[in-house]
Length: 151
Image (cartoon, rainbow, N blue to C red; front, side, top):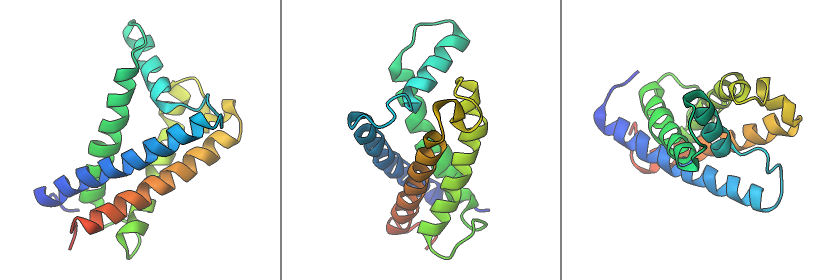
């Protein structure tokens, strides 16, 4: 594990780039009418509103989405980079993306009422989120590499 500030900043930037790509794909999916009920931003906004007894505010969900993707996963990627499996940063990113997906499936999904692995929305929920997290991880890893992370 490495707590190199330069690598951590590059990890946050790479996480942000991965989150931008993931967000674009989520918007395309929703606009195409593919599983519109699978909307993590709305799910997080609703979950926070219910827990805090406030009105649903989508801005809360958007901030959470970008902070988790950029800061939490970006920092985790930079810090855990040496121990993540794979030779390339893209594969290391996919490994972290798989871990992020698993944590989402057993934590926030059930907490939001979607059930374990989001299965109350059907089998496509875990499959679609898995694909999106693989893409997120690959993009984050590639961006980290291009930024000179762990060079």
